[in-house]
Image (cartoon, rainbow, N blue to C red; front, top):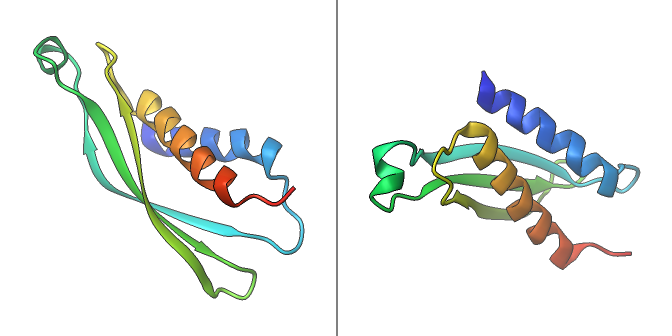
Amino acid sequence: TRMKAGFVKMRRDLEDEYPGGSPALHVDLTITYLQNAGGAKAILGGLGFMVVRAKFSDDGGKAVSDALLVGESEAMRVGEDELADAVIKALRDYLKEYKKD
């Protein structure tokens, strides 16, 4: 699906900043809510957004963190690709708070 393709793109985009190695942080994403604001909704002031639950675990599978990430767009034509990009930004912002250089 288009949504799956968006998350594959997200993974590729993040691999440049987080190339892997040990210790590793594993992220499991689950879409919990999706609202597109295309067409009439956008004209009437609708907002497209996606809420994603992110579960973070270490190499041993131990839970490290659990977060709800929100990606949103006020674009006139909002699709899954735009919302996946917005979630990428939300995940990137979340990870920056905890990244060790």
